[in-house]
Image (cartoon, rainbow, N blue to C red; front, side):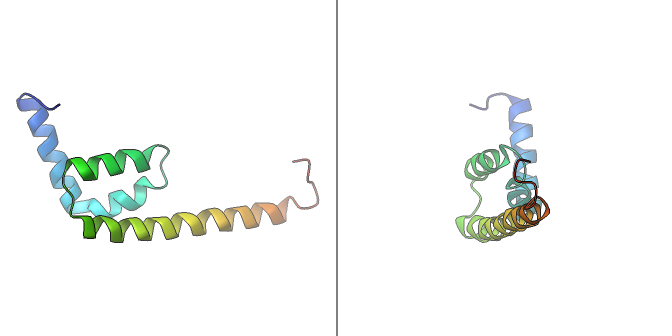
Amino acid sequence: MFRGDRSRERLDWARRQMHRHGSGIIVAGRFVPMGRTATMFAAGLLETPWRRFIVADVIAVVLWACYWVGATALLGEAFSDRQWL
């Protein structure tokens, strides 16, 4: 899949970024459309330790769920008198 010097350089760069900012990338990827899929693919490809991934993913899931529950509650309350919206 990755052949040539340019591909190897990009893969090494991605590995360094995942090592440095991996937890932040995993958490942020949860909030970006298609980011969850890309993040999981990258973490697997770059052989991110599963313990590090699972901790970051649990944090991301909890934040994501709280965000959507909160947003839904606020919007539901704001539009409760105008159900057609």
